[in-house]
Structures are given as structure tokens and as C-alpha cells.
Length: 95
Image (cartoon, rainbow, N blue to C red; front, side, top):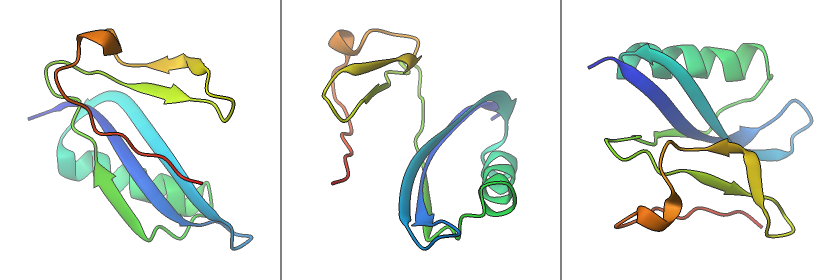
């Protein structure tokens, strides 16, 4: 099914630093095409050697928040629904 896609990707950048990033693609695409173009983007434009990439299915509810290092919510990135309405969540953080 074609829909918007979101991925978690981890790997070293061109300086050898381990990078954890979430890539959100609002363009409706298949899982295969979306993953392929995201991997290509990370490798070619961000010079990231992707170790792994996970599909973060937006589902029907599309809850999503990113927190800054100081604990505040990043107001520039969010899902379509309020996080307080979520029944379950996947929480990911890095130190």
C-alpha cells in the first residue's frame, strides 16, 4: 500500500560518528520504494554508512514526537494526532 513513510536509521557518518536519525517522508510510496530512496538519500547525500534501518509504521493513528536534549518537545516535528491519545508507544532514545 502506498502511504507516507517514517524510518529509524543508525550508522556512522563520514567522520565515523554514530548517528541515530528519524527520516520522515510525507510522499505516498510503497514500503520498498520508500526504504530504497531513504537508504540512497542517507548514503549519497548524508554520507552515512547505514548499519540498520527500521520502518516506523505510521499506522492509522500516526502519533509521533521528538524531544530535544533538554527534555522539551521539538515543535517542528509531530504526528497528526496528540500523543496523549495514544494507546501504546514505541520509545527510542540514545545517550
